Amino acid sequence: MGLPRNSNWTNGSFQGLKPSIFCGSFSTTEVVPFHGAISATRSKAALAALALCLVAGCKVGPNYQPPTAPAVTAYTPQPQPAATASSAGPAGQAQHFNSSDGASASIPAQWWTLFQSPELNGMMEQALANSPTLAQAAARLKEAQEELNARTGATKYPTVTGNAAVEQEQPNLSAYGIPFPNPSPFTLLNGSVAVSYALDLFGANRRLIESLQAERDYENWQLEGTRLMLAGNVASAAIRQAELRKQIELTKQLLAVEERELTITEARKQAGGASDADIESKKATAAETQATIPPLDAQLDAVNHQLAVLMGKSPAEAQIPDLSLDALRLPQELPLSLPSALVRQRPDIRAAESLLHEASANVGVATANLYPQIVLSGSGGGIGTSFVAGGDIWNVASSLTQPIYNGGALRAEKRKAEAAYQEASSVYRQTVLQAFGQVADTLTAIDHDAQTLQARSDAAADADASYQIALRRYQAGGISELTLLEAQRQCLQTELDRSTAVAARFSDSATLFEALGGGWWNTAAATTPDEKAQASAR
Image (cartoon, rainbow, N blue to C red; front, side):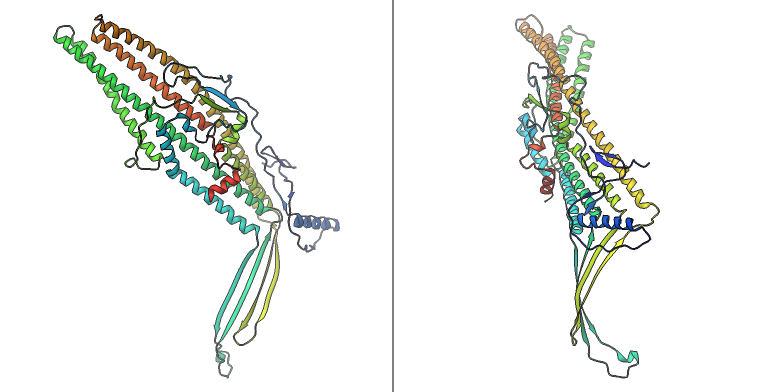
C-alpha cells in the first residue's frame, strides 16, 4: 500500500512517501547538456537541478529523527511507595527508592559490589574477563566496525589502481609470408595508472554509510547488553547458590532433630510409653525430610556448573567459592529512573533504536537507486619497447546510468525498505513496552518480597520465642525432651521459610539494577556511542 506524498520523518515515524532532498557540501564538476524532445523550459530546469546536485551533493530519502521519549512518568498503576516494609533479622531493612529523571548516578557500573560480597565480586571479574559469549559479541562489533571502515574508504575516496606489464616478443615473419629473416627478440613495456570515482549525487553511498554506522551502533549496544545479561546471570546464580547452601544446612539440622525424635520414640516404645504407630509416624517424617536433601544437592551442583560456564571455565576446572546468604548485604538505596530516562539507559532499547536508524537509512539507499549514477574515470601511462622510445597514453571518460525499465523492481525495493522501517518501528515500541513491563514486575516483586519477609520474620520470631519458653521449661523439668525437640523443629522450619524470602529480596534487587540498564554510563571509559563503539572495536 502506498504512503501519502510530501514526506518527512517526524519523531522517528514515517510520514508520507515523497522524500525531501537534503544537500551538503560537494566539489563542482562540469555538466554536459542533455539533448532530447523536451521543452526548453523543462530542459533548463532539469539542467539547473542536476547542476545544483552536482555542486551541493544532495541526499534523497528521509533524515532520521530519534523516537520521542515516552510521556508516561510511572511504571505501575499504583503510586510507587517511597520505601518497602521492614522486618527484624538479616536482610530485613527497608529499601528506599531514589527517583531520577536522568541517567542516575546512583547506579554504579559495578552494581554487584553493593551486595558487599568478595566472593561475588571475584566471580564477576572472571566472568567478564573470560566469557566466550562476551568475546563473540566483541568480535561481531569488530566485524561491523571494519565493514564500515571498508565501505567508507571504498565510496568516499576515488579508486586508484596501477598496472605494469613486461612482455618478451619474437615475431615470426614467415608465418605472415614475409621472406625475410626474423628480427631479434624485443621487450614490450607497458605501465598505467587508472582513477575512477562514482559521484554520489543523490546520496546513495552516504545513506549506505549511515546504514552501516547504525549497524555498528547496534552491535555496540548488543555488546553492552551481553555484558549486562552476563552480570545479571552471575549475580542470580550466586544468590541462588547461597540460598541452596542455606536450605541444605537448615534441612540437615531439621533432619537431625527428627532423627533424635525417632530415637526417643523408639526408647519410649521399649518402655511401653509409645506405640508402633508413633514410631512409624516419626520414621515417615524423617524420611520425607531426608528425601528433600538430594534434590537440593543436585540443584546446588547445577548452579555451580552454571557459574563455571558463565566464568568461561569447565565445571571440572572452575573453583567456585561458597557464598553465605547471611554474609550478603541488602542494598538499602535503590535507584529508580523515569521511563523517559530508561529508554536511553537500556542497551536492548538502544539496540532496537539503532535498527530503526538503519532501516531509515536503507529507505534513502533504495530511493537514491531510482536516480542516475555517474562514474568519472581516467588513466595515464606509457608504452615502449627495448629498441624504440615509448609514447604516452591516456584517456578520460564518464558514464551515466539511468534506470529506465526493470519491471518495477527498484520501486518495489523502495516499498520493501519502507515496510522494513515500519517493522523496525514496531520492534522498537515492543522493546520499550517489554522494558517497562520488566521494571514494573521487579518493583512490585521487591515490595511484595519485603512484605513476605516481614510475615516470615514474624513467624520465625514467634517460633523462636516458643522454643525459648520450651527450653526453659525443659531445663526446669516441666516438659520432656520430645516436646522440646518439637518446638525446635518448628523453629527450624520457619527459619527455612524465611531464608527463601531473604534470597528473593537479594535476587529481585539484582534484577532491578539489570532492568534499569546496569549503570554502563558510569564507567570511566563511557563516551558518546560512536566513540565508545570505535574504541571497543579497536
